[in-house]
Image 1 (cartoon, rainbow, N blue to C red):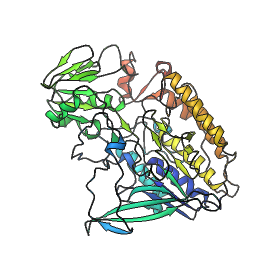
Image 2 (cartoon, rainbow, N blue to C red):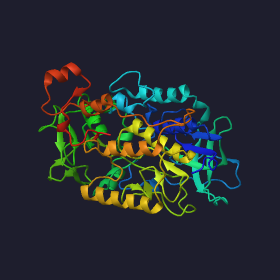
Image 3 (tube, rainbow, N blue to C red):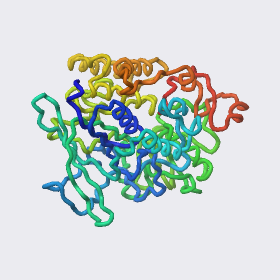
Image 4 (cartoon, rainbow, N blue to C red):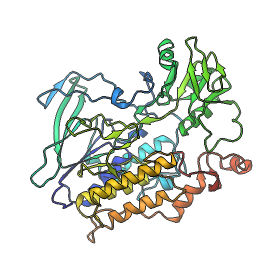
Length: 490
């Protein structure tokens, strides 16, 4: 891709992924215009803490983002102003008071700047880190804050065949109390909007009626902020991922014991029996009109005050104009980007990129993805992208692999060396910067970083030496062979 073809780049999202993209594209020093659009009032993405989660989101069992996070209809004849929209946009974050990072700081932070301390830092350190990263790299001048991208539409191709994009933008004016709408066009767009906004609650027999009959009793973990809000309450937590584990452990100190935790299967940090104050239950089979909850083993819980669903999120791209762009960008049945190559390129849209989708080394992987995109979009990549046919074959082969191994398309395990192979592929695609210094290059995954990933863990392991655990308090050393995958908790 010739550098003369792309002069303007729009980046959607100013979280960690957006910071990585902004740094990589700015370093190329060949783009005339780079803008980072962020709907919140500051950079930080999902690490911005909203102490007040109200109004609480009402769970909609089985509902996908296409239904509950639809596009916002723009006024005609832009630019213009309009009454403020009241549609739910899922802007608030899921950060709870005692949340800390799950990945050792040496592996989670960007290669050119470490966290203030570690190994597992509280959420406010991560948020400050992202803000400071924009400032110290002089990227804050690229930020367009409190601005939501409401529509991304592909424009007719130029005579050179270059796809260009029209962005419909909205910003609330707090003085005039109106929404200001306008459009801007760009040669390329990068989606770095994250995927921890739209919560997902699975369908369960009777759950919808249960939610209607007992308003406020069922919430998603996105609305959880502190265990003290549930003091002396009888609580059932659904799910045992990282957040489910955090929440259940915290509730055991404040809620009525036992705190019930519904698990589909054991997590890597579960022993043969639950910790004190916690009782494990199988998955919920049915919610009854009288308030009782029936589990797969036909056991029944009565008088539950709160059910907290810690069942994750679904990727949402409400700004993607499926109608004009020829179809959706995300397959919710297969839970993956449609037509993707290496999880970041889209073969039908060569001037569109996505950063932050794969489940792997979070910030560090964002850096690799962003640099690879920047090198390709500047035309300075070391090796060319494969043909569309080869990219399609890559996608088909990967789908066969993950289907055979019964895992998600965008999950990239560490312990089978898939993460290293993936980052190595991006490393060689990007290549080195110019002799003049223009452009960044992917960092090496040195021995200290790899050692931390495999040995420094946030959660204690079953049968772990108690004296060592007491000594290390909030983090622990474990034998990596006790994990199926060292990055399972991301």
